[in-house]
Image (tube, rainbow, N blue to C red):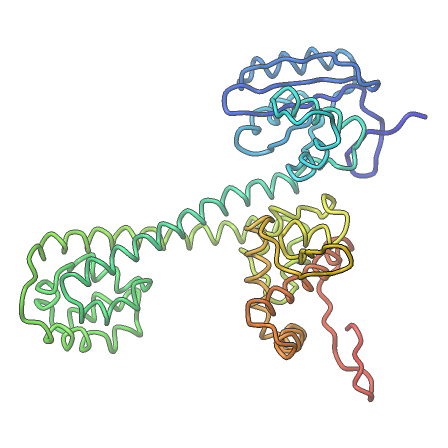
Length: 414
């Protein structure tokens, strides 16, 4: 009986040739198998269009071709684009699935040739492990690009903020105490860009300070000018190298302002792109899941098909407790040290944000009453929410809170 290897929704005609491509920056490695597992091609090829086009044309002569990569973005983008231009179906074997499948093959070595063979053979024998690189996957890839850029911007904003604290603290501690808590306010950053030293700020009266702050920090403009002058009066000495520090303050404030403005622009683009994914309404219906958390979940969870159970997902995130046992004695249970840190952080922060929701707060309070500390209780809540999240994605249904429905106090799902 011939199996269908069509990974497109609804099934269809089977593929004849399965080409696994282990992508890399400069040189890919390709292994192509027929339905019986015979190797038709096994070679390295440069990451350029002519070589990829020649390979796919050669393989397409043997029958309907499925090309599978282990990385759909960045280094794998050109291979996917070339295949699509030739009307060749494209699949993606997620890294988690590939690592699990690779353990089933003999040998412990890791080479490009072995990885390409594992990809091709998985496409041939385990088509359910593949993801179709369609519009949904492309949206996730695009989200990953913007989310990565946003993470870089966030790290840069933190670095610049710390540098600004250090520079202003050096020349005027009282001013740093006042303005330091407002370094993420655009009006304050524009003021420091224009006047980076205490002497330059002293030269501005309250009306001038108010005019500098008002366009982007209207509320602060009402109270901050008088506070700035009060802080400036607390120090009469001029610290050596104040002029040079003033240049640093002005320059860093301008850079931080640009980074914060860029984050706003990226957030808008993320929101726009996120709305194109069919699972977004399901994900953000869950309390504590906003746009950035939804992006982090989509990048790992995808359509949910990679994970067999909610426990599988929890274990991958590092939320499933690890039992230490010897003989008949269970020594202890502890949080695992391994797991996908980005996913774990997203689920943990999402659980924290959900504490305003009655269901989440009740579960958290119950764990605290059992003697768990704040972090442990939140991790338990994150683990419980993983079960709910997995079911939501699997069934494509929004979050359904529990509400009291009976006189005896029992609850039912709304």
